[in-house]
Image (cartoon, rainbow, N blue to C red):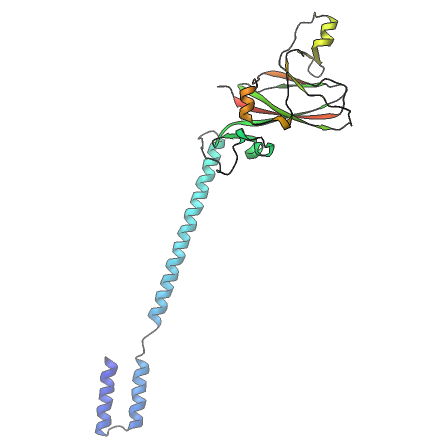
Length: 250
């Protein structure tokens, strides 16, 4: 509005002859240029918008960092036994307890899952059969029980045949048995100086016959305490690998 009034005054001076047409045009142009809208306000608004955008992104990063930290704390407390997490595994991940895929059984640090919850773990025992060692004695941790699953082997000595291992669960502490009974029915483990009854045994199944842990739990007897693995025959340098499912005794 001020520039219009000034132009009217200049026009009046032009009409009165106080200024000529050239001077009028020059003064008019000067007034119009001096009264152009300032761009400062627009720039200031852009700066404010950018500042708000940066603050918004900063808050998002802060909350993401806080969430990750909280999850790490929960995982740490779960490992310490302070709390128990019930995270379900992904729907496209096979349940370990129902799988016959050995690779899936060794996921999650050998933990075994059923409906997303840890129900036990996979235990692996290895020993090499040679001419002096026909078996292996092992102890199951207190308040735990193991279900035999299956075995695998590696023939390191080019043997003609490989025998199926037996699981011995009964010790013989009677030192007065006859020689014939000893040779027919006793496995003498030299490493532990213990006698084991061969007549009270179960055979391990091979990996190709393994269906699932759940089926093995239904069809096989779980064991606890001290037990022995025994392999008959004269083959040597055979590496056996045995798989068990460990769970707590409730």
